Image (cartoon, rainbow, N blue to C red; front, side, top):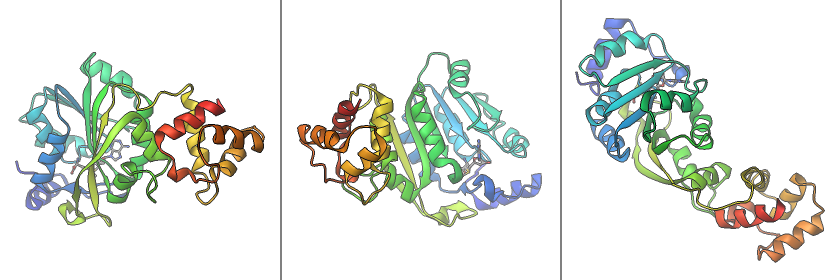
Amino acid sequence: MNLTSPKTIRQIQDKFGFTFKKGLGQNFLTSRDVLEEIADAAEIDGGVMEIGPGFGVLTQELCERAEKVVSVEIDERLLPVLDYTLKEYDNVKIIHGDVMKLDLRELIKKEFGEQKISIAANLPYYITTPIITRLLEEKLPVNNIIVMVQKEVAERLSAREGTKNYGAITLLCRYYTEPEIITKVPASLFVPPPKVDSAVLRLRVLDEPRVKVKDEKVFFKTIKAAFSQRRKTLLNCLSGAFPIAKEDIMGLLTKAGIDPKRRGETLSIEEFAKVSDMLE
Ligand code: SAM
């Protein structure tokens, strides 16, 4: 069953009386090349968890390559469709649920044991940032996270310091992973086409966070403060967020060799680590 074909998608819609729900980000991918790129980039070695299978187009590709695929879908109407489209595969399990509400650590342990897995998803855009934040902060046993996201989001998550796209979420990704845009995907390759273009982003999870910090909470608080008002200097942003006298913060920054007049977006992750260790 070729689920990349718009004709097949229409036939399945007719068979099951299925209509797309915009609110659930239901835009289905119709490019075999992109599917293959996602599956290649996932560097599958054993198990894969998928978020949002839709009609199962990516799920099929993952089933071809993985020992086991566990796929979480929120929309109950898709369960009979997936039974039909995935009937040839005996290495897939569909879980009906909201990925934001499931205990993912527990789920991975139950389904994959001690194995580290890959996560692959053509994400519903309304939960892109919360889901990526969750996947990273929970420190799940994961090697690789491959996600299709809005192009601008992929650019933000993989941005370099000093660029306008660089922000707190970039640093979260860089702390835990090596982010890389694998390919850009025009809106025309989805049914129905979304309003924006997309990109496939790989977050290759590092064995250890990229920098060593004394206290992760202070590290992320420092970053959040530094980007809270992009036009303010680092000194002003930090003195608004930490109960430390401005002169003292100025002294700490100068001692660390960081000009207090710089803006947050110019600091590298190593410099943020240095600053947060001094504020701790
Ligand atoms: N994987 C398919 C593809 O590539 O064509 C469909 C991707 S579509 C962009 C997003 C899918 O995520 C839809 O099937 C939607 O129902 C599902 N979804 C939306 N919110 C979800 C949530 N909170 N938890 C699990 N699945 C969700």
